[in-house]
Length: 400
Image 1 (spheres, rainbow, N blue to C red):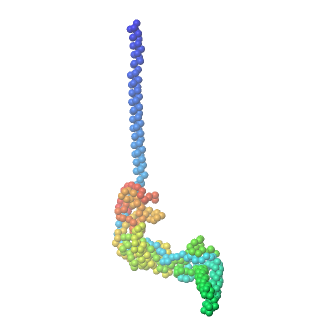
Image 2: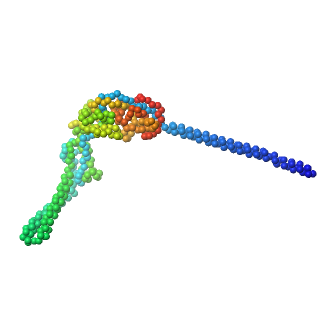
Image 3: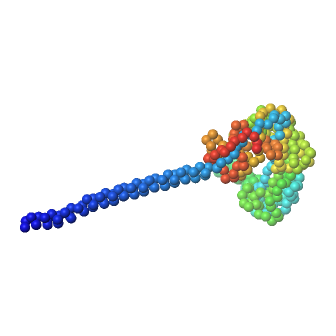
């Protein structure tokens, strides 16, 4: 019986112990699968991160614009120095009023040639006229009081000599006389001041020249000085002789000095030439443009040369300095002036101001602002900025 029970217990225990190895193997497989899944996920994330990094790097590379550069071309030396210039009036001044009132009449309009001291306009000054009349009356009153004080002082001085009056009374009368003289001087000065203000009602030409602007009309309210809406009455300019200002590049500066002969030529007057001489130079190179400011005085008795005109100046000097030329499509025309985009050794754009000389058609002479070794961007974009990173695709030394 006991043997039978033991066999039964053994049979009952055997099924319980058999599933345990199967359960442990399942857990192991599950863990392995999880590990493989995590490894696959990590590898996938790493691949995606690598792809994103490569894409970002490629995008960054593509974002850097690719440019074509050339170097300035060296031109043969020239025997005559030709530079652009601007004509300016020898003397130019706005004409203001020195008194308040209303414009009664103007006598000269734009284009009128006037001589120094010639009447330009009249101003009605009713307030000044009234003040002037009061000042004259005040001066007459002060003069009468002074004369009375003088007679009284003289009388008391004679009486004091006879001991008829006290010394104090004599001193009072003498002091009253001195005060009368001071009041008369004050009234006289005020009268002269108002007289000068009234004289300003007549506007005269301060120098001989031409009227370039008339800014007021009859009946306009005139304010003294340069304040108010109608402060400037006329603009005058002296155009004989006329000043011609030109910026001589630094490399040519030693050849240009006072007394050098020059010839002026205007596109509006083809075939005509106007001679002049260098009157003065700034004796200093401008740090921005690297040019020497030079003034040429040209006789203009007929007034043919007009202020503000663009002209070409031909200097009678032998120029041996190196000249450079660049393609027309290498220039940038900005509000601040003509610029060229130069690629530096760091691959960044640097905008340089240049001075243009002669126009050769497809190329332009550059008189200042460039070096022969500069790498110029062809067909630069208007959006180029100072310090922008670029990539040079190919370079050449020709002006292609």
